[in-house]
Length: 284
Image (cartoon, rainbow, N blue to C red):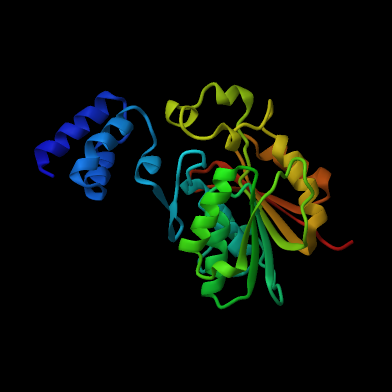
């Protein structure tokens, strides 16, 4: 790939309104063979997300398979992984608001669930870090989407350090009960409001699955159900941690309170926006 050809790709992407034409051009030319490049540039210029074109996206410490029909992992969600690891006492360096989470000493196998798992990136990343610490862990990854279940299963096979300890199941959290007992439940559910759906960037609204985005008029449809069912499925002292929109912290905290959680805390991401809320099930 010559410098002139790369400049031409950058020009095409820039004219198409690409937000990062230089970066996208470099990634495309480094990852794709010459014969696949023209089609990839055409797809990117039309607005298709780079992760779908390449088929993968890096998240935390792993590189996860991504395909259309599954939400693309985002760096903001890494805060949910860090929060979970801090709660379990396995985060080597807690920065920002994550340091506010009190660690628990859980004996035996750590049992966790990742609801609305998508690619499986959050649950797999949490479990891999625990495995690296030589801890026993057992996890369940759930999603209603068949495409998400297939993708998560593939990522468990390719990215998990111990695939046998993770189970991926198709599950509708809105209508089905949550079986099992867990020490930790994490979730990045749909949380985009009806009004926000109309204002999404074309790259998201035209390509990413609305099933993984839409959450009703106030964006709370999933939290209202997840928190009640998760509280019932938690062991004493267990925690639930969810990602949410930057304007939803207060509403999500109220739902945590209504579900019976204690010690509720909302954490800001590294841009200073509310991003993760955690609550705990204390005995008595």
